[in-house]
Length: 375
Image (cartoon, rainbow, N blue to C red):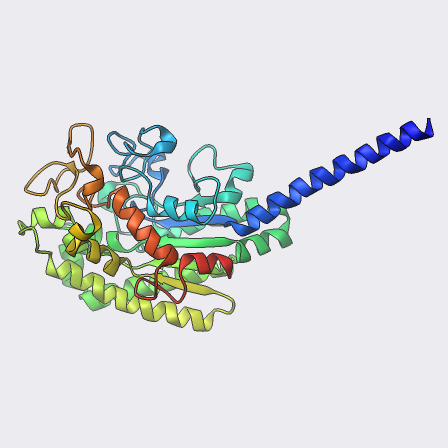
């Protein structure tokens, strides 16, 4: 009887050890990957939040998502043919699932521990940005939403572990600013008043001051590892080339000058935050130079055009009407730098993501994203 009991006990101990080894093995595996990815910004990284808004800015219609394998080629609300830069970076940093859109019904329970996506097509730094679309989620409201997630993580992990998880195992990725120019300051008719009353310097000042306050607010919610994308060469997108009737190799000077002006101020502001917010690392992603490199030297990367949208209608570069079911669509999607009048193709996103993950200080500084994860 004793022998039998001893055997049962030994088997229970062995089972307990095996379960624990498996549990701790999973923790180690998780440690080697990224804990959570919290994504903020605009349509460049929106993964479906706008599906749940009454808005004119939507991407949950075909042929968007035609190359997105996780959905079987169905649209998900991503403004591209496949994965966004946020999706690709998450994959490479070891995340088993994509960050779930905050407004999606499944953004509850343990799924939020892989990360949450708050980005919204049409959203910007300033609250007035994107009002042409009726509804969109600007940065202030996106951070309001994160405060809800923050409380949920406290409940899931307990306050102390939650704080460690947010501070040490999570990356906060923010891609915002382009709409503040395209769908605010530069918008025909609607923004004439703003341009008369505000010089470019004053407008950029306003953006930087708001953004500084937003990043500081995230820091106070325990965010420590940040990657911030600067504004790309918005004067070179098919929409701008089409409405301004430019040649293939021309870009809109004013739009690019505004982006460069803002980017210079952003770089200084992030350096200031790195100095003034203890324990934080603010990484600058030089999206402007990365995308400009693809636009200028597209053939070097296997593209056949960097001026024409793959999916769109209107004008020489299919750059006026957004991508939708009635749009003309190219056959060689992987050979177009731009998917639609505004957004890069998955092929471009793959090249950009690779540079952000492993690139040198020309494109990502002071550390790349793989180094940021391991800090």
